[in-house]
Structure formats: C-alpha cells, structure tokens
Amino acid sequence: GEWPEILEMLEINPGLEGKTIFEYFRQINPGRYQDNQLRTLQRKLKYWRATEGPAKEVYFPQIHYPGDLCASDFSHMSSLGITIQRELFKHLIYHFVLTYSNWETFTICHSESFESLSAGLQNALWELGGVPTRHRSDRMSAAVNKDCNPETFTRNYGSLLRHYGITPERTNVRAAHENGDVETSHRHFKRAVSQALMLRGNKNFNSIDEYEKFLRRIAGQLNAGRSQRFEEELNVLKRLPARRFSDYKDINNIKVGKSSTIHLQHNTYSVHSRLIGERVKARIYVDYIEIWYAQKLVERIKRLSGESKHRINYRHIIDWLVRKPGAFENYRYKEDLFPSSWFRMAYDWLRSHMTLQANRQYVRILYCAAKEGQTVTENAIRHLLEQDKELTALNIQHLIDQRSTIPLITDVVVETNSLESYDALLQEVNCHG
Image (cartoon, rainbow, N blue to C red; front, side, top):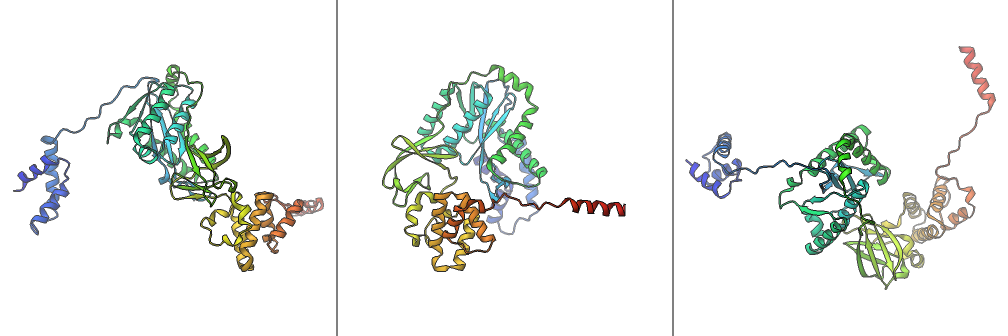
C-alpha cells in the first residue's frame, strides 16, 4: 500500500495533515479512493503520531515571584464593533499584566508603534506607583517594521527600560505562548468587555473618554479579586524615577507645502498658512502631534490612525479660501471643511437654493466661524434653517451681532401652566373620585 510512502512524506514534513496527504494520492491515482477512506487515514495518522511520531512541544509552567515580572502586548479590539458617535472605532489596547498577581491595566492606542509601547508601559508603571524587575514582550515586529528600523527600535526600547531599571525579555520567534500570562489576560479581558457590552445594550459611546471609563470599570472589577497577591507585589516593587521617559518621537525639518499641509507617517495634516514654505518640527505622541517652529509650540493636532488619511483645519486656510471661493468645489480635502453636520446641511441648502453662489456663501460662513466662533455660527445656521429663513453669511453675521436672539441648542422652553388649571384638574379628580 501507500503507507511506506506516507511515512517518507511525514519524515520530510511531520506537520502534513491527513486531508492533504489524501488529496495528494487522489490526484496521482484518479478514481481509486472514496471520501469515506479519509477518516481511516486520519485515524491511522493519529495513532502513528501518538506512538511513533515526533515529540510534541512541551509547555513548562513557571513559578512567579511578587514584583519580579511584568508582561505586555498589543491586542486588537476592532472586532468588538465599538462605535464613537456611530462611527466604527478601530483601535488596539496596549495590555500590561503583573504575572504574579495577574493585575492588569491598559492604554487605548491606534497602532503598534514605539510611541504606543512607551506610553502604555509608562502609564502602567505610574499607575502602579512602582517598577517590576523584568519586562517580557513579544518581538513587537509590527512596531519595528512600521515605525523604524530594528536598530532604532532596539535602541529606543533599551533606553526606555534603562530609564526605569527594568531588564528586558523577549519571547522567541513564533512562540507567543511564552508571553502566556498576557495572552490569557487578553482573552479574559475581551470576553469581559463583550459580556459588559451585552449587558449595556449597545456598543456606541459619545466619546473616547466615555469608552475608556467603561473599560476602566471592567479592569477594576477583574482586578478586585487579585488584591491580596497584588499587595504582595506592591510591597516589593522598585521606586519610580523622578520623571517619565520621553514618550514621543521628533521628526525634524519638515517643509510646509504650498497647500498649507505637511505629510507625516503616510498621512496629511494642515498647518496655518503663514507657515507655508517654512520648515517645522513634528513631535509625535500616541494620540496627538505637536508642531514646533523656532523652538515654539505653534499647533497641537489630533493624530490620525491608519494611513492615506487627512486632517484639514479650515481655520488654517480660510483667509485665502475666502479670497478664492471657486477653489472649494473641487478641493481635494473638501469633506474636512464641514466641521459639523449643521455646516453640511447649510451647504446642501445653499446648493439647492442658490447654485451659482453656493460655494462663495459657504466659504464666507466658514470665515464667519473662524472669526466669530464655530459654536455661535452653528447656532445661527440652525436657527435660520429651523425658521426657514434665507441662509446667507450676511444673515448669519446679523444674528451673531444680536446673540441674545439665538436660542442655544440646549435651551428648552417649557410653558408654565396657571394655578387655576391645576385647581380645575383637582376638582375634576375629586368629582370622579
């Protein structure tokens, strides 16, 4: 039979599965084998592996000591379907675990980068109020490959751990199970989050802060049952240094283009048009980017996650856009110039009521928002739309000049009933009582 040949195949590649071997022999001997013979082969292979096959990898349970080892890794959370204001929130968490007590904490982040690792580890240590002896991570290949070359990552990572006096440990290639404590915590934490979302009834949050508080409550509940061993850890942790390690990355000598934009890590950001032609420094943190010019902080921008995205602030370019309103129609980043749904509704109204002047009027409304304030301009837009009045920049400016006439969105008018109406109601109740 074919068994000797199968053994030769297994000697070369012990990982071959029964179905793969079966399909191979069906191809070289068409019509000879039936589907029900696959189960026979699989049983024979199972017996062979257990009696004569290669030794399987052994997992060695480890003894953990208080305050000795912490472990961390990134965990993708997007599969949970979390939304922020109805938009899917793609994100990860940097997950940190003390292996003796299994005490855990996390930092929300948007990419596997050195900045995320640095911020997450330091947030955990300062939340702890102390420093373990060793830190174990997987090989952080995504962070290395995405952000910098391996030498730069190793140098930065080493500097971070030396700052805290922590000895680094890495898991071996394709051996993430060596970081088993944090892997197990990943599963338990995500399961706990999933269950809590079911109890909550929906997966939408008004803000990232609200979502983070939700996660903090879950982590607190999980940690509540670990308090005794956690106290043992706290008693032997080393002292924190006087300050944090710099958890940012500087990119120098970035030229601001003619479109008043800069390109950072495969994304596009606007800066003020007065910086066109100048060279700036970008200081990149986990969640935001600082723009520096001549040793002075000139802008702080929310950092984009992912690649090939853009964040254009209309305030940066409005002084020239109002002079060139015709550029608005086909502007590459046009969608960024609707700071809220009310501005989008205003533009749609203008397109349907004054087609030829729509772009000019909308750009003037944006100019008004930049100079007078976005909230008060938005309230004026809302008021004109609700009152079915002509929506023009001039009418908006007129309303803003008479601010007291615009009811705020949060204002609720409740008519007060007279006391006589209550008396009449009580008499009616008494008559029918």
